[in-house]
Length: 464
Ligand code: HEC
Ligand code: HEC
Ligand code: HEC
Image (tube, rainbow, N blue to C red; front, side, top):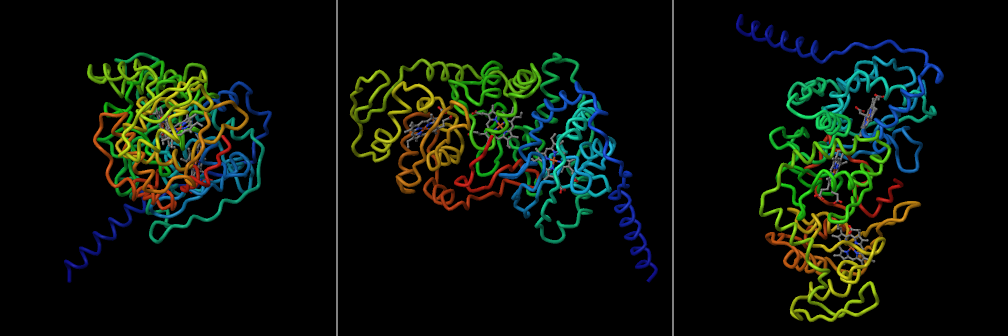
């Protein structure tokens, strides 16, 4: 009996300790500060930082006002809605002091002391400096207040109890500012600070464990976001032509690089935002990411060189109309249905030197051809690439209506075999069917995933 009392006593103490750990105090509400009280230069700095942080991507629902929240973020655990971060006093963060804002970024706790779900990537934002939080706060507090209540999250018990997040944080959350590496250059440190912090690149590019936390021993090894593969950005980068600081900078700031192709899916808004980043920041991020990838092996370098030097090589297929109007002859393996589909549906744009917006890059240069799964090329083949709004940019039609699942699988088998040196993809047809049905397995997705659009690509009519 005494032992039992002792055990109960110990349990009670453990429970109280947990509560004490889990408990965060409220920070008193303030009167919304006047717009004029913020320095214009600080606001401008905040705007550039918010672009790197992609705050607009998650905090704006389709057709909704910027930063007014309400975007649905599906996770394997249930649905979380982003909140209103406009300075509306009742439904937004108008009554948040700078201290409350900075605490939410650093600790993932709201003004009233409640734990926030890591779908808000504070596991990265914790690295942001006080100065940068001050600028972000100035920027957000000078936006137009919008009255908009975020819908309630749809999470099962016990995940709907925010206190539970204290346990998640204890296990996986390492709060703390970025610590510069003195052995590296200032540019590298700037890039690391932004990529690891505000840019939260690892939120998509690092695989996650079953509880939705990034696997720290597999950083940048490739992850999944919204039914797209976020390629490895470490030594395992599948890019046939190794990335360099220059090509990464071009890709990040324009969403396109001539020897790598276009940024699609959830990467598209990242690159669209990067245009508004402060001068030099995209290059700093590129410098850091290039060092994470490391020097490519001599084999990869020579493979990349070969891939770039090959003249536009129309497939051993039917006649192709080239850019200059001349007809390129060819013969193809009549026994390979994939080759015939490629020759008739794809080659005129991807293999005939046709310029952008309709000319796609030769597929032997694309990470999509070399990636560990065909998820991304399936998305592109089925749903195409819409023209960027109001801009001249790459356009590709979707083939969902023209090709059956079997045909897409045959086409992909042909592309993989012909344009890469990688082993064949397995179970491609089943994956095509799943993606077409919008039921693509989102197991790798998680509480912290950077979801920004509906999982079904047919609905992805993003406005960025
Ligand atoms: C990957 C998606 C994502 C990105 C990117 C993102 N947020 Fe959020 N944010 C969320 C979600 C989801 C919540 C709500 C979490 C919850 O309910 O626990 C949230 C909550 C917040 C909150 C707490 C608001 C409240 O009312 O409790 C603040 C403040 C915030 N975000 C600011 C920002 C800022 C500033 C940025 C850009 C630097 C940003 N967020 C980028 C998803 C995101
Ligand atoms: C919301 C999820 C998400 C975030 C955040 C994100 N990425 Fe990506 N990224 C992707 C996806 C998905 C792809 C694949 C896009 C495609 O197929 O075109 C990608 C592709 C890339 C590529 C091309 C790789 C290749 O070999 O083709 C680079 C480089 C890249 N991202 C860098 C970054 C950097 C740097 C950051 C942080 C500043 C970042 N990404 C943040 C999802 C994300
Ligand atoms: C009307 C022209 C056109 C046709 C037809 C076309 N594409 Fe594309 N495709 C493009 C453009 C433009 C891009 C974007 C620019 C780029 O990435 O090279 C693109 C991009 C791609 C990509 C992504 C490449 C990357 O890494 O950025 C893949 C994969 C792809 N197409 C496969 C196909 C396949 C397979 C077919 C045949 C079923 C096809 N395309 C038919 C124009 C076309």
